[in-house]
Amino acid sequence: MLLKNHDHENPDQKLTDIISQKQINSILYSDPFLKAGFMSKLVSEVKIDILYIDLDLLYSGYVVSGILALQKNLILYQPSENTINDILKEILVRASTSQVLIIIDSINGLFNVLNYKKQAGKTVASIVMLLASIARKTNSSIIVSSMARYKKEEGWTLSPTGKRLIETKNSRKILLEYGKNAIVVNLLDESNKILLPANSVLI
Image 1 (cartoon, rainbow, N blue to C red):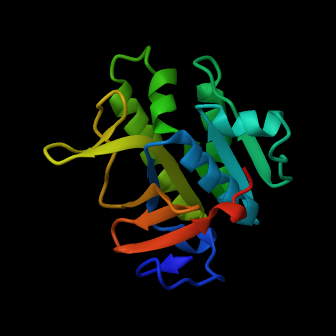
Image 2 (tube, helix red, strand yellow; image 1 turned 90 degrees about the vertical axis):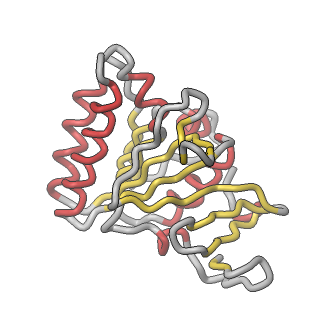
């Protein structure tokens, strides 16, 4: 629900309305369960194919346990060090031929999968930018989630590693916070907030 403050609500507002096709949607959070709630609600609203790269396995855990149903338009990937390259190739092909939503959940997990590389940071940034470039050609959207914290001296950094957050001029930062019986979706670049009531979240 789009808010200027928490006193005025728009019950018709959908999360899909805030996802940009022209920018990298960077979802920032301090608690993985906030992120999981946001993702479950978003995925339930999306009608096009969703290519979900689940690197922290939290969303997959809810699906496997039966708490969340595996939607017909959702392709759920669980990459490992041995499979990440083939998965990325498959996603690039799919995203280059049809409109999709790509979710990288999370950047922290992608660093862990690629930690064997000497320049993992550059590799992670290159993957995100390549996927974003392909997505623009088919009017697709890309979401990148990051467990992060803000330091006045350093800006946004990944938690707990302290690595710098991948930021470009083409990124849109969306911060997830706890509210009273709700998830507050803070659109940092627009000074707007969305209130996601707890009873509307699927987990």
